[in-house]
Length: 505
Image (tube, rainbow, N blue to C red; front, top):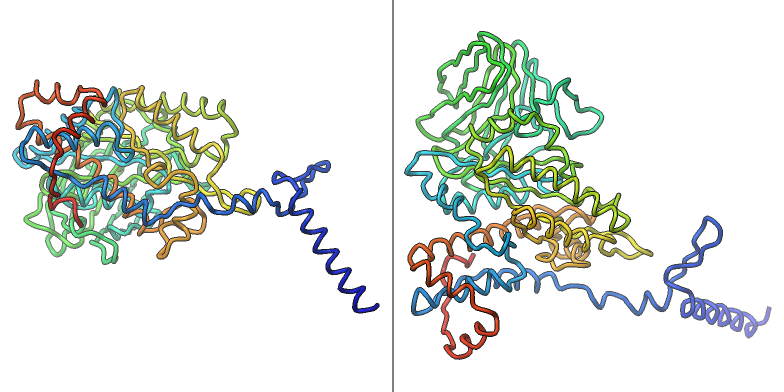
């Protein structure tokens, strides 16, 4: 073949490929049960022009939390009013009631005076495994309200944690509502406050020690109060704690079908401990806390979409929450339902299921404050490119509407991340803020999200503190002004704010 013919053939191929690239539809061409795809001009034109700048998003979110003050106390309400009404990174409140968290803050502020431990229970899916997100929130809240330790743990820990090292031995079996085929299911519904329990028969031990993980916070390593919640125990059930080298008192109990809280008061912080048990009992949780303050519990439920709580014995759940002074419940779900959502009907069905769960939880925890954390962005390959999972924005908006309707606050993690397409950019970020599955945050990414959540909640506390110093009627009048009036006043007064130190890292 002549050189000219070869060149003409190659050029012809390029022309045909170029024509196909220009005219081939982005959605492909269906031929029977197959769909033929070809890189299209339409896809190429889309490119990544809408890709978010992660560093810019993180910087803007951080700036939106920066507290400002002015010459007078009343004028400093300006920041809070803007934050509560127009800041997209805020916690959305039922009925826009800015006093929603007041009862919680009152308890936490008085924990030292009352020598009490008030619990914040964080239920979530695998996004919070290893104590991700929760660990940051715990550290920040304990810095403000006091408290320490990793909080409530299961006697058998299946997933390692950055915040605690633990092990077990002896005749101890774990039963869980959520888990794979290796998880045991009980013949009853007494799963308890952690949606799981461990059955001990005969002799067993649970050991724990403070962590050396580089990502662990300091407060989590301070343990001075150990407790264990048990139920349905046999007569003569015994439990002994050995903390560091100190042998604590042995606790012995008569048979009881209800719950019992076993506590050991320690003279100071410990670095390790072993609980030895003899007899039969259901162990619903082990609490590793400080002497008083706030305890924040991580309860990661891999594969769960948040629809299991109504399957737990209601009196047991109610008594456990009351006994442990659980004052706030965080629910972080939604991502695991995405693969089965194909449209609005699926979302509506899911909302009905979650509606029942929230009503159940509010019934068993009538004094608790509730906050729902929406799902993160999730990446899915569409025509060879990673984009947001179809239906996720609609699911997020539906979750917000449903939770607010049930008088539960909502934090829009999807929007805080940057919205559509953000997860792909979190993965590409250097260092990575999310893993290659385009679903889960890395430890660094989880710390960013946890910090944002903590800062947002603490702003509401700062607002609570400010309102205590002002006449209530002045606050009500100031907060009820319409946006047009607000903008006119801002322009007229031309505030000169200066940042406070607290919100700078």
